[in-house]
Image (tube, rainbow, N blue to C red; front, side, top):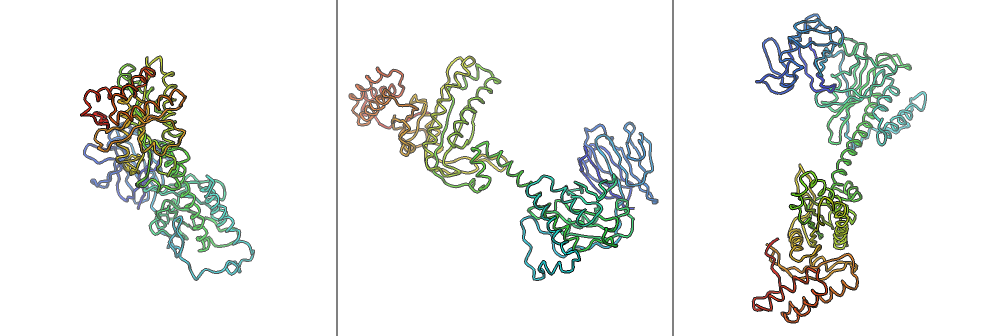
Length: 603
């Protein structure tokens, strides 16, 4: 006698196999492979069903010995742990029982169902065509008849249309409703006149019935679908039907006719089946057979189930993508990327990059300790990230106390330079709020340095298939990072390059501070400071500073020092004026060595 063994862990199916001889089940031993490894032993086979650390299962616990009369001797090999059964009470340690399949054994959080293999009572018949996956189209056929001709022999006149209406209802629920599996099983019972129907999911090892529906409304505790016809539908991807006149298989006791239509995913793999059986003749016929037309209807309904499962998979994929995208992009942009994922492909783009660094992080973290530093920097990054996304920026990365952002990709933006500068100004504004919020713990106001640069870069997934990170690469990015570092030298909160300044809206207030050569980048770059508000005093400062800067660059150092001396006296807190005065005085002393391009010696 051939038997099937199905193992469940915490009520979830984990393993299935077939056997005809003795089977021993036990916990993994030191020289054995992990769970569900099957090896030959004297007199039969051994299956590892629990890992070494699971004390509820003994190393040698259950032995199954099939007998010629159809019964199975269940031996408890354990010296301490009993085996529960669904029909014969408890098999105590070192005890045994004779059980008639099907039956269930329980040890700890594992259950084992043993049942007879089905014997083919009659041949199975399949539909001619292979089942199509969701989205596939069946090749046109010249054998298709007009609907009027197909329905011409219908005594009641409207049966075929009623079938189509019911099938359409299943397809509509598959497109929008969560209960489409139940509706499909119910349609099989009501339309085809079967006694029981179910959507049966293939999990890679066993068939798992879902949403079982019956004509009577009651589901037998021992009801199981036919694995033989399900396996045939899975292996050939066709709808099979079968009539059986013998009740040889316990799981098919009393069943007269079966049908199974495969359910495919978008890749054409079988992930389940729509299954039904008939034990009694339908009300309007004497035969119990399932006709080819009825099998075709079951296949049509299975296609609706496949479409619904494909919809759920798309929704899960879209949700996962949205969660991933919204870590970097605004919700609006994340939604757009769901529809056009090709926008994330690597490409060259004109962008603006922003680097923002929190000053004095190491000193403050030493004072606050790890826990409060973590809370503080998370608060800072949350506020700065909001500023970036408020102005439609892309969050590229966080590196300790630094945040990196980008504008102009993955979607082209005409005013990306202005948006980046607006975000930078908003970050300085938020800094005041943060300093106020953390004043008692920090003991001092914190400053930031922001560097902004525009230009061409390669943008795309700069991470890997394991960890997504959308961002830019190239000299434009490197220069933006160096400009952020230059804020320390020029004593300014926000610096932008000439590339960015050239295309800014007029509303962004700026003054040119210097031409510099940053570390590891040979080409000089003009740096500009931007501020949120420009009153008369700031405008006067800007004009007088830029006039002095022109004098320095023309090597008119005496004129420059004169202007800058007065400027520093009137604006004693203006760092750029102090720095330019220092450079002018040094050049006045050793003018032969002067280069108006200021070479920064550190990042």
